[in-house]
Length: 259
Image 1: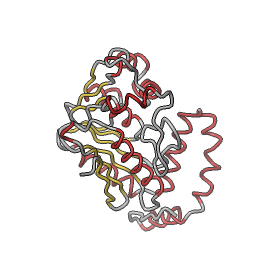
Image 2: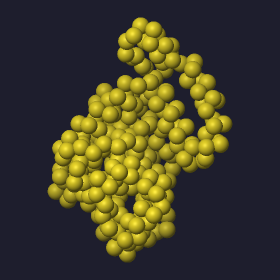
Image 3: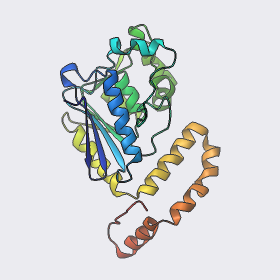
Image 4: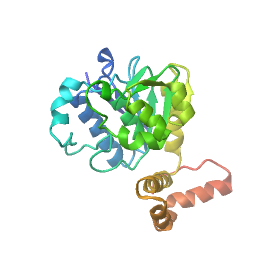
């Protein structure tokens, strides 16, 4: 049985953690399967958006620490193999396509850190989040110390990074860490609906919007401003722009091809 289910659904790549008997605790094999799925998402021209979810009652209880101790001790961390793309984006290339994230039950440590490297998040009511590393003798090394304060504010981030305490789905929704708070069992269908809307939008426009947003966050607003129109120029020459204008004139939904 695969530890990660990977399935193409039209222009969407479904990536599902599939170790429910272990509360989807992530070992290194799972990491590499997720990294391979991210690489597939980035490099398959038919795919436009990813949806990360988990089978069972819980998204993940976190890393299987006994399988990761050597990685943490080597001073380098884990490195994706050829044909893989780091789902935490600590090393290597950033994903250029959006990912929608659906969580339920327990979503601890690596689950939060993968979520922080996604773009739209859905959680079921009652979902529990935590960065427990300081209770295990280490500190978060999958992106939480880099991204969590940007998402929820410095004080809120340190409140939970430095204590290892849990926070609720309701708090996450109030902070803007998640965008949809739904009834338990609805998180996948709501996330899929969002992913389908993204997949119907113009792929070049979606990627351009995501790229510009990431430049603004990572390199600053001035750099993003300088890149806006140079990056828009090739998009304006695309077939999709012509289709967008034509569909507007004909008052119909556009059918984009990503060309």
